Image (cartoon, rainbow, N blue to C red; front, side, top):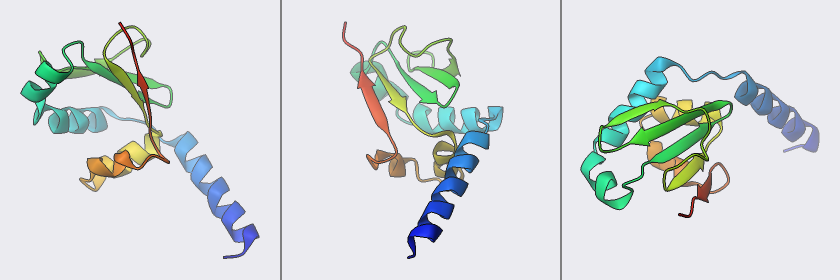
Length: 113
């Protein structure tokens, strides 16, 4: 592919990522996905974990099975998963949350005690 075309596609994707918004429907869909493994997460990550989706910060509490807005993702939990907003929306829409394991999209920050 020509370098100019690659640059154009990259710029388009960057603009689309920047313009993407996480809706309540997206949050509910992610919560449903996480709740499938809720009891495993309770044991494995008792302090919960967070998602940083652009400017949106969400914290998952497995004990109560809820995913809610968080002011900051550094305030607790066992780790923070940082994912581009549009990438998360596409993974939820396509029912392939496991695609987020591709390391070029996701950064995971471990929070020590």
